Each structure stands twice: as structure tokens, then as C-alpha cells.
Amino acid sequence: MKYDFLVVGAGLYGAVFARQAAQAGKSVLVIDRRPHIAGNVYTEQVAGVNVHRYGAHIFHTNNKRVWDYVTSFAEFNRYTNSPVANYRGELYSLPFNMYTFSSMWGVTTPEEAAAKIEEQRRAAGIGEPRNLEEQAIRLVGTDIYEKLVKGYTEKQWGRDCRDLPAFIIRRLPVRFTFDNNYFDARYQGISIGGYTGLVQRMLEGIDVRLNTDYLKEKDALDALADRVVYTGPIDAYFSYRLGYLEYRSVRFETEVLDQENFQGNAVINYTDRETPWTRIIEHKWFEFGRDETGAVLPKTVISREYSSEWKPGDEPYYPVNDEKNAALYAEYRKLADQETRVVFGGRLGEYKYYDMDAVIASALELCEREGFC
Image (tube, rainbow, N blue to C red; front, side, top):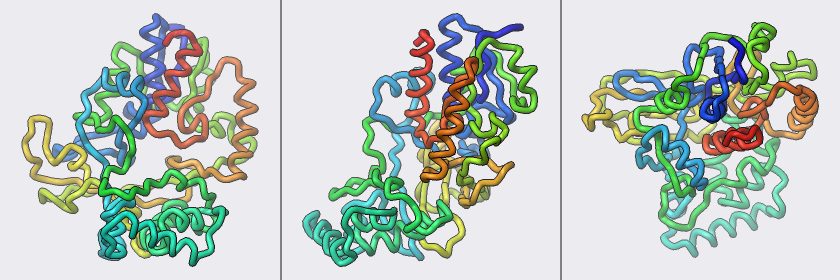
């Protein structure tokens, strides 16, 4: 069978494009090298708990169009992301807010907290931030930087904070209120029953082939369709001819525990440098510790996350957005622009860290350009 579109990757970007193309009467084949759909938002049931296999994914957006779109495929719960920071046994609220400032300094008013940050900023001599360390001190002062930012960030990126660009944390939430909602978004929640069901409904009626490696079977697969939407790594598509783009990867250690409650929160970040993992996810709290019938889940599932430098064969997670990699991506982008049958999209195809709502918005924009959205 000849298809109008071959979509490489069954994650959110590919699934949204495939759904819209199919609704417009186009024939679509979706392939993925993994044995499952949904890409990195894949969730699977373990001991009754919907486990986020590739790390926590909390949907949040101010884009009503995207919210209306995604909720047409699944019902979302009212989960609010309120992580906790653990620094050598000391617990602090994230995002940085009045609870954090009170625990750190004993202050009780926004005025006192702002004065403390300004005092530490002046003492550090911070003007226009030249790197992540200076940006963090400018935002939250020296104490919070040293305890809650430095160790976590250096584990996450594998680099000294002074060697990281300031823009990485320009959006760091800092509030002089007692508001523990990490995201400043109008719409927020998690797909009830997990994201896999959401993507499955997007792909209903569309041909899907799993365990299919596009780059290993490229000629045969290209022959099946007039156009290709490619969501894999852009440098891999071109056989790394210009060199490898850099990523940070993540390794997960997941355990099923015969207890109802391990840490009392879905996300706890370990911000000291000595603890080898960056955070522990207790998946059941994304859905309030209950199954879809409302029954309390008797067991819990936790995942420790370890950040590492990416190497070929690892799963690429976070693009390293420095000048060197931006320049290399720009060269790959020139090659991509010469591919008349292929569209490059998504986190890996565009070498860009995307939140889920931005992935969906980007896929819908592609559909508009193709004339069927």
C-alpha cells in the first residue's frame, strides 16, 4: 500500500500530525523503533500504578486551543505540580516561594524575603548575569543557590554552574506568595489512566508498526509514502556526517514497594551534590494514590533518576543548548531544508526541549501549513 505520509515516531508530535492528516482524508503509516506508542510520555501499569517510564510528565499550558485539543482525547485530573527539595535532610518547597524563604531564613513577609535576596545579591556583586550561577544568585540569593540550585543543576547537566548559560534558569519560578504551584499555567493536570491511552485514541484507525527502525530500513520505508514526517534525531538522519549533537540522558531505577506511602509527594528533588540521583518520583501521587475506581492503591512504585552524559546507544533526553551545539544544529538544519520530501519536527528533529503543550502546538502548526488543520 502506498501512503500519503510516513510518520517516523509515535510520540505526541507524530500522533497529533497523524490524527489530523487522517481526519483530512490522508492515508498515514506511523512507525516507531520502540515496542510501544507514546514516545517519552509512555505510561505503563505496575502494581496498579500508572508509571511514567521515561520520567514525570505533567501537562500544563496557557494555550486554550491546545488544552481543548488534548482533552478531546482524554480526561485530565486536577494534579498540581508541587515538588519538594531535599538538601541533606532539610526539606524546602519548590517553586521558590514564601514557604521556601521562611524555612531558609525565618522571614515572614514578602518584604523581608526580597530584602534578604537583595542583600545577598549585592554582597555577591552580581550585575548582568554571565552564567547560570550569577543568574541564580540574582534571582534567589546565595543561600538558596548553594543549597537548592547548585548541586541539583550540576548533577543534571554534568557541568559546573559557572560553565552553563544564564538562560537555562531565566524562567525559574520565584514567588513572594505562599503558592506551591510550580507552573504558572491556566490549565494543568495528568491524563487519567496514563498518557498511553491518550495517544492510543489519537492513533485509532491509523496503521502503526512498532519495533521498526526507520534508519535501518530507510529506502524500503521511504518507498511506502509520498512524504515523511521525521521526529527522530536530526543528526542521526544524516548519519552524523557533521558530528554528534550533545544531549543529557537519564537512567531510571524503579522499585515496587510493599507499602502505601514512600515519600508523601510525587516529586522530591535531591539538591545536594553527594546524593547520586537527581530526584525520586513516587508515581501513584500523580493520581492521588488511587486507581480509576477510587480505591486506595496498597503498593507504591518509585523511580530514582540519574542524569548522565549521552553517548550513542543511550536515549537522548535534553539538548545541550550551548553555542557549540546551536552552531552544529544550524548546519544540520541547512541539510534538512534541502530534503524536499521530509519534514523534521519534535524534540529530536528540531533539537529543542519542548514541553508537551509546545509539541502539540508545533504539530498543529505543521498541519496548518499542510492545509488540513
